[in-house]
Image (tube, rainbow, N blue to C red; front, top):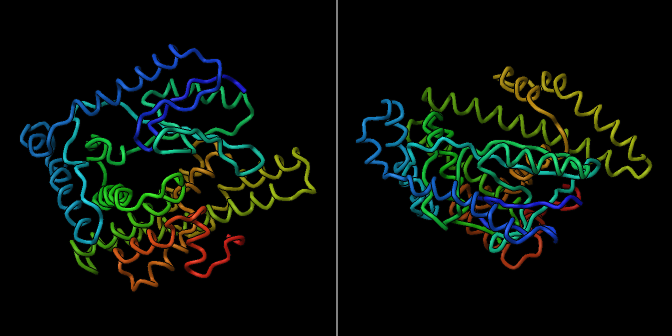
Length: 360
């Protein structure tokens, strides 16, 4: 395997990863120091939200977003999410993009994983410069992996530092902003060591549910704001169903021992090549958005696995939530209870709702 220098934000925590033997220690240290500079730049440039508002450098719409943040956090606390000091500040001069990179075997859903102190095994790496991500992308592709590079809109160190807002977040609509902030508070509330996929899928579910409840609480059922949000949620649910169906089709191909590797690759290309035509049959309320997304970038196992990381076993989370009478706090406490000490939190979740783990 190609020798690499691996550094990850690893869900926001910069740490030197387990690198392949033979890379000089000084080289690794220099690389770590270079990447750590970007994180330091982001954190050192923070200013409190009120100071940012008073600076006069933001538009009225951006000021409105800044003022919403403490309200969203306060709402999260009211429904049982842990209080944090995150997003009490912003770095107004930050102009970098965070890039996440993941990789997978081309004929099975098996991620390349990197190990880091404290956070454990991670299915992706993070970089502050696209050029750095592209170097690793080329190395992974040379080793025969499917590779996917995407941007990350928000930033979290999971409580290690007081994370600021990213300037780009001020361009988001209110529901997306609330969803993201509440998602990050969910991480602070429940975190299962060593299971990034479970943690992200759990927080994704909580962010969606809490974000929806926040909008209804703020604007009321039947309001234009809630109606627009509900349309967006309906499309997001339809997209998850669509992607899950594609994932299952591909997984069936990869599990077929009667197919050669070349035959699996051919069937994979056929399935992924059909995405544009398949998406037209879903009935999205905003079909242009999803046609554009399907047509954008390369589709491969790494991209499908990235979807899986944030959206696995959503029905099981919903069933457990409903079993607690729709009480989000009780649901989160139940998640913590059923996964305590479990070797596989997904199997524990399946057992808790009476689902067939092996059929998922």
